[in-house]
Image 1 (cartoon, one colour):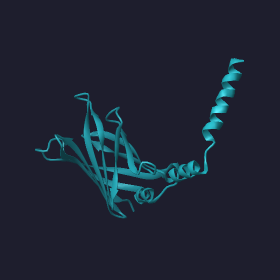
Image 2 (cartoon, rainbow, N blue to C red; image 1 turned 45 degrees about the horizontal axis):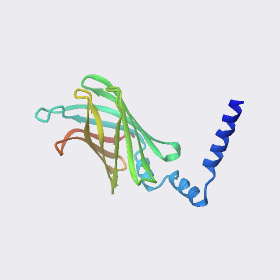
Image 3 (cartoon, rainbow, N blue to C red; image 1 turned 60 degrees about the vertical axis):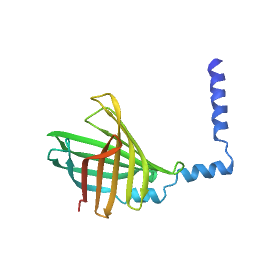
Image 4 (cartoon, rainbow, N blue to C red; image 1 turned 180 degrees about the horizontal axis):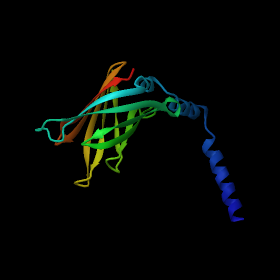
Length: 185
């Protein structure tokens, strides 16, 4: 009997949650429809060769390596999944990001994960012409504290774009990575 009551209550709540006004339905429809910002992300779909320049210490020469990236839109064109692979500091490196534009909040949101850590980086930001600037935080495992980061993705042409990453220290942007992408032919 208890299960029947819980099931009935669950069904009642689910029907109530889905009964919406036409205005509410319109808002849901607009939120789930890809727009111009999603098209901008999709313009960078495909397979890319990457040259990665990293500065572990700004006073030392950078470490330069190569990598590959595959970008594709998922979930009906609402999000772009980017899968990265290469070598970093002599070790195999794999990373993945999910980037989308939140129609309701009017902002881009991105996540980043890789095999060099168990933390998830979360960033938010805005597009200005062909430059997406994201700000967020990531865990510094050495200190156990979050550190502020900034990422800048600039679409240079249909066949090239540039990614820059900065650590924000005492309010100053310190560039620690640049990746130049060229579309594979």
